[in-house]
Amino acid sequence: MDPKLKIKTLFASLELDKEFADIYFALLRFGPLTISELSKKSSIERTKVYRLIPQAQRYKIIEVDQL
Image (cartoon, rainbow, N blue to C red; front, side, top):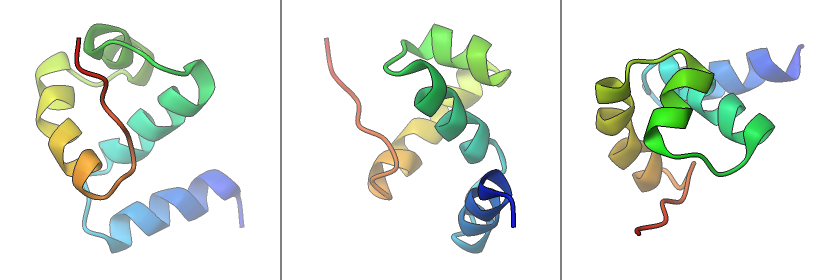
């Protein structure tokens, strides 16, 4: 099975939004990003990225640096 498909399946099994995989892959590819950059690189609306970040933090999928 394709690694990207495995990760998408894992996120789906955790009942996470389908956009989580896009955020995850954008961060893997580009490294640390601002919310605006992450929105552009993942093709997800910025406001939706803001809503998804806390969930991703709870599952320890991402870390957020506060400025």
